[in-house]
Length: 262
Image (cartoon, rainbow, N blue to C red; front, side, top):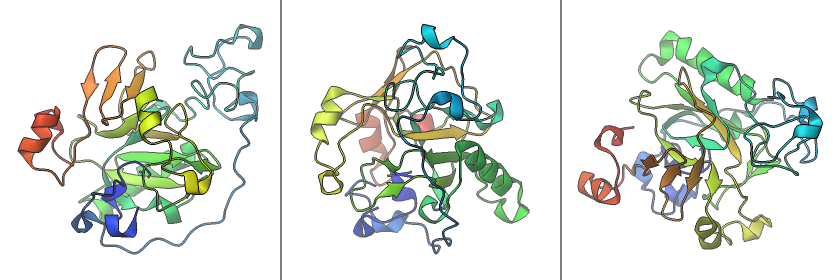
């Protein structure tokens, strides 16, 4: 879906779910792209949160505070991207707003469109329940909810409805390509990545993702730095695992041993 979609596409093809230019072709998925389904109209940035199903609207509109982690009724993607669109799926989906879970892409999102994050999660669960997918059942998903979702794979334009289904080796230690807010250094470093598409780097990861069954503490916020590391408000640090690098190289960058698997 987007950030490290080396899971499905080779670097030569210039493509998560989003692929770095150094991604080796040996990691691309050996499967044809599924036929695209009927396109849905994407939401507009100023669409009120009250019009989006299953959104968290615990406070009164007059009490809305941008940055409190809740997409209140008066807040929109345009007025408060930090909080919106918010969680829109059942707890079993393990959704984390502004996140891009990694994993092997078992279904390429560019040809697999859904109307909502909830539908994307349902598709992941259905894939996992199918005995034919027993070897690599979907356990993580990523959904594009913007008209165009910014990513680091500059050779593609990711659009509303993309639903990437992924499989991680150890979902109890989930891997992410990016989470939460982009640091000022990240935005400066990648400011021109999509200049050809007239897109600037957003303040936060423009994807919604989840790991099935995961418990997400929404009070914890994350920031993705220019070096790809992700730091939480609770003091945790996650460094993106790069399977095309050696174990020693990953360890040197700070990748935890339990996360050196896909």
